[in-house]
Structures are given as structure tokens and as C-alpha cells.
Amino acid sequence: MEGCTNASALTREIQRLGYRGDVNTVRRHLKPYRSGAIPATVPLPHLTVRRVTDWIMRRPEHLTDVERKGLDELCDRNSALATTVEYARRLALMIRDRRGEHLALDVWIADVRLDGQRELRTLANGMRRDRAAIQAALTTTYTSGAVEGNVTRIKLLKRQMYGRANFDLLRRRILLSP
Image (cartoon, rainbow, N blue to C red):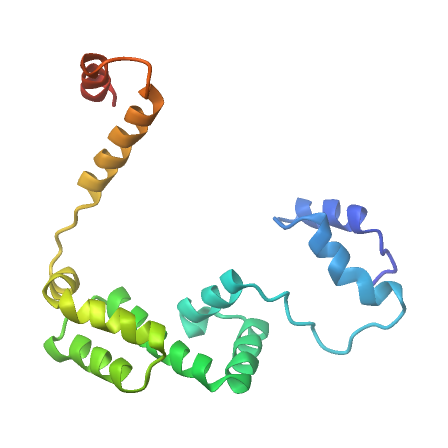
């Protein structure tokens, strides 16, 4: 608002304040200011699949006003997206809060199978087949995180040694690495 429209200079200035974006994002934002037409409202951010997915999966109370407005506009334009957002948020809430009530998962699957999008129905069918495992994940405190971490570490060591040494050396590296 002080008249500076040099994207590089502004980027350096706001990066010192904690901005983690790049100069191209600042340049896109400055475009209307260079022509003299200062927008009356805050422009919506550039929409990407990742950004919209983030808006959907984040808790609604953690969205900024601009993000909430953007998601609401998208849902107003596409009723299928609005339905998908509702089901995704219900499932995310169930998983986040680890609500393992006996019927909550069954109700969600039944609702999706009745009027969800094809992709959500496919997910619901898979969840119905694995219902016991999902119910256990929602109700128990056990986790396989440590085992999965070790499997990832072993696979990394195996990839690093591919074509270079025999099994004995791989075994030693696995047993001796932290």
C-alpha cells in the first residue's frame, strides 16, 4: 500500500517477517496493484487440488475467512463437492476423535453408499470389507508405528546397497545401524 510494486524487494521484506512463499506468488498478488486497480476485496488464493483438499480436511474452525469463503463458493457451484465435503469431514472427525462407537462407522458407510459419489462409494465398500480392522483402529490404543518405521529403515538400507554387496553385509548394516 506504500507504492512499492517490486516483487523481489517485497518478497525479501516479508520473508524476514516469516513468509515462506516465493517471489512468483508475490508477483501474482501485485499484478492488479501495478495497473492501478486496487481490488476492493481480498482475492481468492490460486486454487489447487492440494489447497482445496487442505481446506476440506482441516477443522472448519481453523480455516481463515478467505479459505472458508473459497470453500463455500466451490460448494455452492458444485453440489457433489458439497456432499463430498460433508462426508469427508464426518469421517475425519470420527478418526481424529477416535470415536469408535459401534454404529458411527456403519452409519457413515450406509449414508455414503446411498448418496455419495462413486469414489466415496468405492471407499465405503472397501471400509465395509475391512470393518473389523477399522473398528479396532478406532477403539484400541495399539499402534504399529514403530514396526512401520523399522520396515522403512530396512528398505532404505536395502536400496542403498542394491547391487553392491551380499546378504551378510546387508544383515550387519541392519543390525548395527541405529
